[in-house]
Image 1 (cartoon, rainbow, N blue to C red):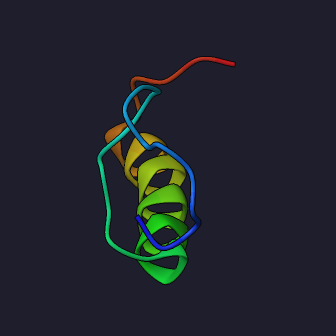
Image 2: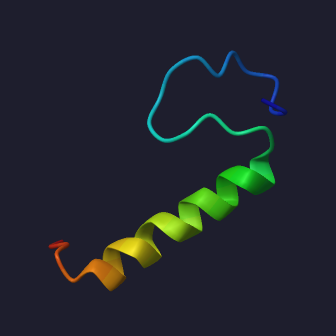
Length: 40
């Protein structure tokens, strides 16, 4: 929401700040690694 773009479509969650987006983007691959069920 703080980037100045419409923020109406796309993958992932709608977040308030770019810092929040960074936390989400870091958490997603870590969760996939921990799950043991991700290939690729």
